[in-house]
Length: 331
Image (cartoon, rainbow, N blue to C red; front, side):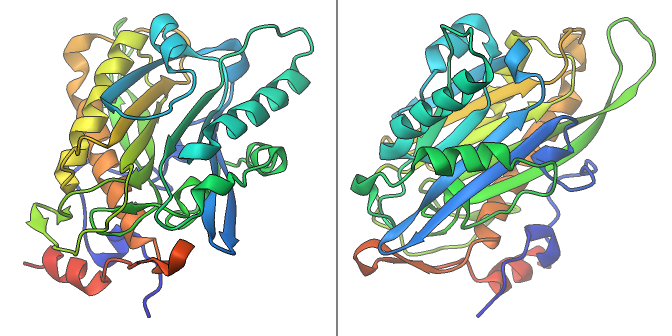
């Protein structure tokens, strides 16, 4: 038996930029994460909530679609207006609509005058390890994830929306990572440190690749393989620039071996907590690098922090053997 460990604990260092203090999406000031997990009796599922401060007044945001085989609630308004006005929630495919309804109730309770709200709820299909038709997520599960969201290091692996997911032939789940970048605003007031952080719900096929080296596995015969990537930053980017960031988040899936299968719903949502866009396009290279490194490491964390899981119809998804990854890092 092996204990879950983050990929850096195995000696694998992705990229060259420094991480944030927690190496997590919660390194971005004002971003919190909460999760609720359901296991047992053929169920391995849950909900993960990314809750940025200031969501009620809207935050600049963008969405990128790698392959639109998904049930992402709220995506068209997000794309049209370039803002989010709610927390971002992740769950299992057939629970998407119950989670969206529960999120709507939570929002209405906080704004008795609201008549139009755009809840953002993404999903991947956890039906390989969970009895997906039972749709077990209740308002209590959703509200608990929202109400307990914190700025601490989010749990990774088999937790929340990643409880029943698999990726690249192994058990996967939730993963997170961050990078610090120095950026100079357009008005030239001097460079300042900013953060790019990501959280992933990994559930896609391909050949696991670590630092460019393959780690073969027996393919898992699971339908609906997908990936949700949430990108947060405090850089003063506008929605167009956030779209450029989001597209590169999907590109970064290829660094760990995604085959971008036709049944995969691959989405990235990027938002900033900075309300006044003021960043020159010519200086986007460091944020792009921070983004791709963070996504790569978060996806690897989603695997190395997961444990072998047996679920619905006694199907089993095995954790990636840590020794195979640790050995690769020393080659």
